[in-house]
Image 1 (cartoon, helix red, strand yellow):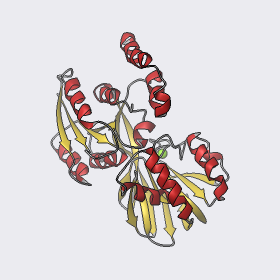
Image 2 (cartoon, rainbow, N blue to C red; image 1 turned 120 degrees about the vertical axis):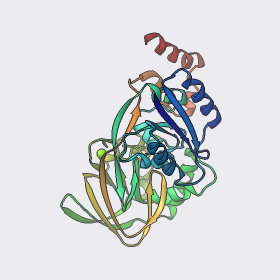
Image 3 (cartoon, rainbow, N blue to C red; image 1 turned 60 degrees about the vertical axis):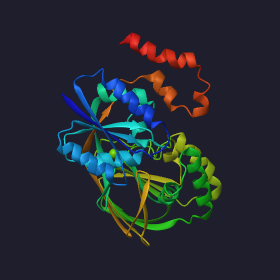
Length: 328
Ligand SMILES: [Mg+2]
């Protein structure tokens, strides 16, 4: 008998939570070897406490139903245990799920929980606080803060905040020490990438490997304003690393000293921290359940922007899962 706990953040991202919960209940009846439990979070930090409680009570799989913020909290509660993390992505960016090829379609994500395989992933830690997707300082953290405090979510809100804040933002100076050397730089933002993307297929570190025990450090230097549309496009084309305004490093440990205290973004949530930031990698911190097989057709549809998805004929969308079952 396997014990599975589903931790739901009722306010994260978009999506239909009730439909998902009903689907899980219905689907779990086909898996008599699994005993399932649900928990709805009440406040920030609650998901970590709940995850830890479930681990102590012998649960084998703890599933986060939410965005990267909820996944962060649940995963944090699992560090150092043998329990496996499941993800049903219903956030606005879903960076970790996208990196791990966990379907954004909730039915296929639930299917992966029952039929997937475990994969070890690393975590990053800055001044004692962990992240599993990306962390960052500079513009990255400023936008994260505005976005979190806004009432609405979704990609368009994010784009709107980016544009508004960009006009006001001034790059800051940093002293960076890693791999035995130190240098000073003026940066627009610095991202610490455990996963390759921020979310929404914005690939800040296309080559990042989530299990290699190393952190990819992306320094986006001060760049002329006119280059911003091009750099933004390069984020989505996975070519940002070739830009003369972007340097990527890889390290196990890093120290950053900035001019003053400020915000640090952790998996999309920004918090205030001092001027000295010390980063380390927790190699193979958590095991995540990922889908067993690569299913190109459904996953390609998942990756398309909504307006393109709408153009895919309904019959074809229904045909793809049927085809999958026939092949099984
Ligand atoms: Mg790595």
